[in-house]
Length: 111
Length: 114
Image (tube, rainbow over the protein chains, first blue to last red):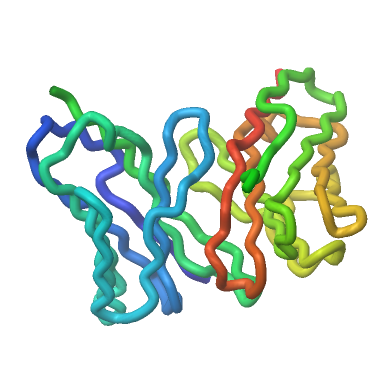
């Protein structure tokens, strides 16, 4: 069964700094998702990565996938306070498409 | 387009009581998933509907949980009787076509069993 591990689980950053969240997964998953959750809100889909070497960027966030290393990264460039949220990575866990999530990374960006 | 909605947003009940959670998926989405996050743990899959049919209920913790999706529209998840360990956030998600489409999540129902 697919297992997904994220690190770090908590991340406190200063505005303007760069950092990377890591997502390791145990077995093949034909796609990898990144979601963002603000407190009390829905999980918002950020990226879906489909193939080895895939890289997607939206604003200050960039996600990449290395299927050989079974690793996805979410890189944050020049963090701003609005990026404060919990970020989850998830892979496809079963034949019916159910998602297997990491524990989430709670990001706090401080001025 | 309205997103996935869930009701209630919060529920506080006593052990042994019954609670019913409701999820309204995005209109036209055939796939509906229930997930749960217990405090400090991962978000875990509970079950999956395609229209009104249960496709996978391998994540349901025990027979105190009953999910239905009448007419392939909204879904309910009933917990009867509730136990302390059922506390957590229950999320619903829907996707349109294939099972590998992006899932869109509702805001969740926060359940506290005392």
